[in-house]
Length: 416
Ligand SMILES: Cc1cc2nc3c(=O)[nH]c(=O)nc-3n(C[C@H](O)[C@H](O)[C@H](O)COP(=O)(O)OP(=O)(O)OC[C@H]3O[C@@H](n4cnc5c(N)ncnc54)[C@H](O)[C@@H]3O)c2cc1C
Image (cartoon, rainbow, N blue to C red; front, top):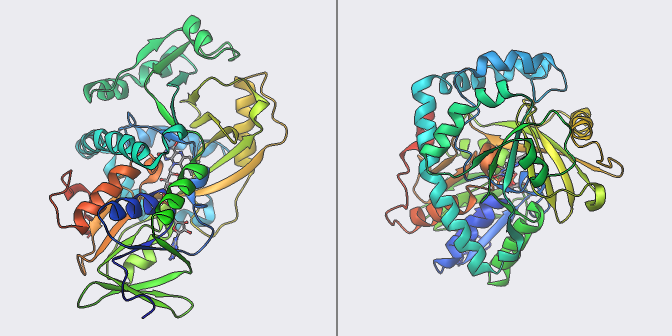
């Protein structure tokens, strides 16, 4: 065994693994992080950087099946399902459809509404105690609609957010202009969330957290975990290069790649990926004041320290298919229509893998095989937002403390 003395092994250095490592370390545990690629370069590097605490409405929603065909008909629209992968997605889509039925949908909204206050308070605590506060700003979020009809169609979602205690206000063209000059004339209906938070850059933020954990004594090992097995005192993690590490606690935070490793313990999760795309333009491309969310088009424009990021879209294409950067280009073209003075030169394109479960909830759960292994994956569109809450819940489980939240909705066994 390579490291008989480590207390906890965390698989994955995305934002979920970084938060889990941080909270375990705060509990006084020695931590080893294992990463098969470059540190913090998974989905957590290229997201939109939004701490989207009011986003309690899942993609599986009543009416989804009416909207989806329209989106799918546009090959570069906000949702796509490449024909060669459609059969693989069928079981996941069936579960997603069931999750969109009214009672299941309302339950999911309530679960997100319950975790979001914890997500926010824990995130604020983390940035305070790690010195990362300067990487988070409160610029507010401006949601924009193409027409009054599409604004009205979202009324129930906004009512649910208000019911959960989130604050925002309706804005017309004059206020939209004040909040973000330079928008195309069709945007006359919007919603402004003044306390919307964002990180300055999601890669820098995740990497800084990993660096913080390492500076406080954690170690890191590059290698691919192929399986986990229970032992008398914890669990053993096996790597593709033949190495093995044993610890009292093992956290699986491998994002979209977690399924096979969980399966090595006999745990089943119908994890798929919603591939997302973006283009990051140089910082001077547009005088962007805050995050703009184009609701009818499924993409967001965010001001980051690394530039202006135009990103979103969902492509249900699995982990192996090569990226289709026409999606990034299609979003950029729309962004140019919506912000006519946007300079679209010199952008960097990216595709990343959202780790997505069909009931739109993550797995934050002990393994069915042993409580020594804790699963923390499947955060879909909300991984950055719910990362600190996940880290806290992982540490609660590892310490056998009463968890800060009821963990029943996040059990891995719910898919049996
Ligand atoms: C376009 C886009 C925009 C988004 N915008 C937002 C947003 O604004 N706000 C928000 O909250 N969320 C957003 N998300 C979602 C968010 O990015 C993800 O939910 C989150 O990054 C998932 O984090 P993670 O740590 O689980 O996965 P990842 O960041 O992918 O990290 C997993 C890590 O585990 C490693 N790994 C995997 N398997 C193994 C193995 N077997 N052995 C060793 N290492 C392994 C991987 O190499 C990787 O580094 C967005 C996603 C996309 C694609």
